[in-house]
Image (cartoon, rainbow, N blue to C red; front, side, top):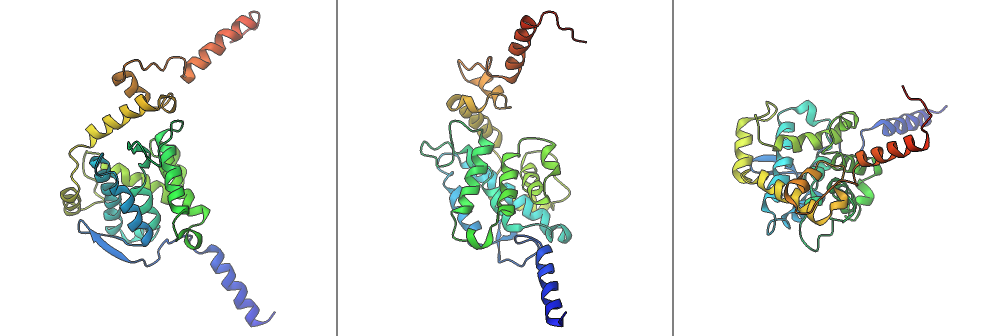
Length: 265
């Protein structure tokens, strides 16, 4: 075998195991709230998109910005971790993770039939695919990281066995909720982010949004944690008959009636 052939084969093998997407790659950066963040056309356009929330849901805009920035601050404080993260996928995933919360009457993201996590995941996926960068820079693996993170954001355990990219989009959103500060983020970074994007109406905004889901798209909230907001706040909301529990109980009664002589331990 010729040397050139060997070199070519080694190069192909190396490219086959190279990190997908933009993991560990040098990308343009900027600073927002004094936090160094990735600055690509896709990320800039994602920021423009979520700014559309400001007139009706300013709490939502602040929420997604903080989620992104807390994650970025954690990466900046850990070079080893940062080298493992696709910073562009993380940015887009955190910025767009709550497209499904959009309460605008003409929202391009929200459907009547899907739970908000699915609306958000599909919305982010389509946003990426429709962007000029998508064809050259985004394969199904990268898009899958973002969709999985958004679709699984409210479900514990399952994301723990997904990719590190998916896990860190979700973890970054987790930094957002009030509670003890994470040791992964410097206090000065917390202060800088919260100074620029205050976290003073998150729970009121979340409560209003979840109640809105139950009132306007009830079929999407049965058998989810949003169901409880319908029960508590929406007059006439009744999940009975729509729950998996009701399906099992109905089937149980029918089974016993049809098979009265069958034994069961």
